Length: 330
Image 1 (tube, rainbow, N blue to C red):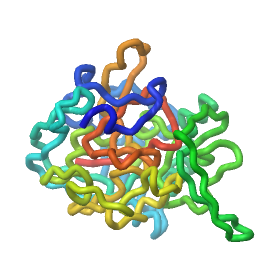
Image 2 (image 1 turned 30 degrees about the horizontal axis):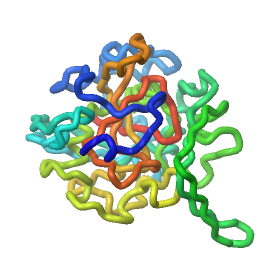
Image 3 (image 1 turned 60 degrees about the horizontal axis):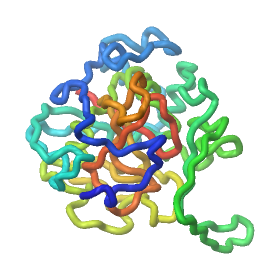
């Protein structure tokens, strides 16, 4: 796969990862639950102290107790059996990792990305304030294609643009992902967006889980067969929320049954990019003091050239309406 095969995203804000610039955090290790903040260099502010007890089973039970029956459905965790997994790409590109086989122990991963409903419980119980809320803004993307239905007349229309657009919007937060005037109405089962790595790590720790490593995420998405897509090696229409879906927004995490892989893991391709815990060096010319993290999976602005092996680089405090996360556990 060459550069042209990857989705086009503005280099100033989101960049595909060059293999020569990688600096993984323990490639064959996972981030420990009790030391995740130290390892990622993140503060532990804004949360109740009890949230960081080492008894993760108790934390999980407490969180489940806060959830209604529908929210519990979106909080399922699936066993990913230990063994050998193929990750990376055979293309020889210096953007993605070269294909290789890794060994992983058993672990559990969320069947779905974290939804708005689950994140709302976390915020209500802790009073947590996200990175975007502290900074006052988030990045808002608009897709190239969008089909609209007028709520009153039921007339259909389509919008076509030469490329997607993005804008730094004041007030673009997780509960109003496109800025003031937008809401989460009808989106409780959509993936939460406008969250940073720090937000993802704090949520994960509070429920007794942790943020996925890149290797765990890709292994769970591609299965031990090492497929290019969740469903196999040939592109399949109507299996994920990508650019040509003309939705230009997130969709429910369980909308596309064809996008569920053989392990039961859903919504790994498109809809939203997902943070991982793995750090990476900034590209040449970027601010060296800033931390960057790898994100996986593509988003609703992705083209059909997206693959599960593709990697993307974000500054750790970056927030946007195309970026979310899912959790994992040992």
